[in-house]
Picture 1: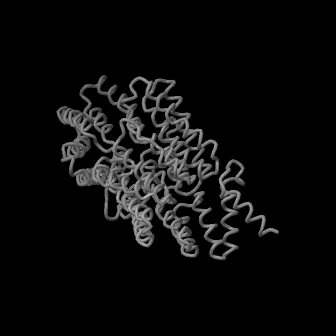
Picture 2: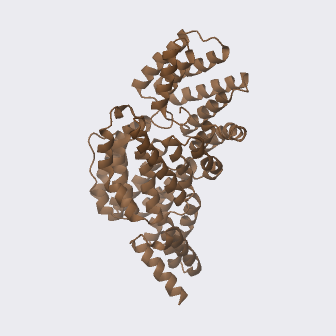
Length: 487
């Protein structure tokens, strides 16, 4: 449960061990480990205080073996560290687990948690996160090869490779993980991260539908952690939009508030780690739905839910600035960027869903602000820089690639050949995206490359199953072009 981030139920198990064996120091260690959620919200102060009390209790129980003492000391050092130096502290934890692994090479758990420490440190690396990810993979991949049924290795590999540059390396782990931990909604969902990166929309949809069913079953059995359902729906919404299934995407978007109201009525839901992000989903679901469909005025109409996370406010401002740029609405763009800049540092420190690529999003907003002011050359330079940085540091989970937006802007500026070159780069990093394929095909037409346009339009129709479930104009355009070239 701990390896699959089912923290709420893992706590119950460690607490049960502590109840039946009050002298078990590792039960207290386990309770403290459930407080640390590095890929979610890190370590809020309330959980840090709880973790300190639990790990101090573990040390006070005088663990009987050197191996236990090393586990407890590694986590204790992290929990007692300065919260302002979190990245440094995570690195120290990873080094401590490396020492534990060296001392006890047959301890599979030590190897798994060493890999987790390295992966968590990579997520906080502002300079070269991909190189740091590869350092984590050098530990996790051999662990997975040797222990293919261990949930930790498969899970942590997926998180480590959750970026366009590394996603394909995690495909074996993604294809295996759901079968390793089939009761965990999070484990059933996680392969969707890699399927989405690789444009495998049907596999992504299947994984997240299974995750939704697991959350619903957990709710019926009065288990905790059911708010994972929101995260699964987040990926389903995105996948349906790429798949051309607008009806199912609309159904999810329109059901956002009823879903949150349903979850809010579940006893103890406030202790669910995912429930923290309800206001984020209230902003993200409609934003992504309308942005992907180029419904710019609808994006501007999205309201701010009370009380919002700082990251919810920031995401809404990001979406609004993109829409305002397309509409050339300088006043709205100026207001949104000014508000975003005022909370920029806070979002980065919050450990929010967008903090990993916070600087990329700000550059993107500034580019669309310039575009709204008709400073087109400046906007293109800023968006190019944003795309270059995103290619280097990785891309958010449910996102519009900056490289694709750069290509969109070039196309709007009447530069189809240059746009096509950017779309080609984009589609290598984010394959099978609906708008990436449609934009590339349109650019190919404009550049006089009819064979390339036919291939791209054909791929768009293949990805969307002939566009049977989509009324978007891009589908009509694809059909008309292919029919014309056929005749």
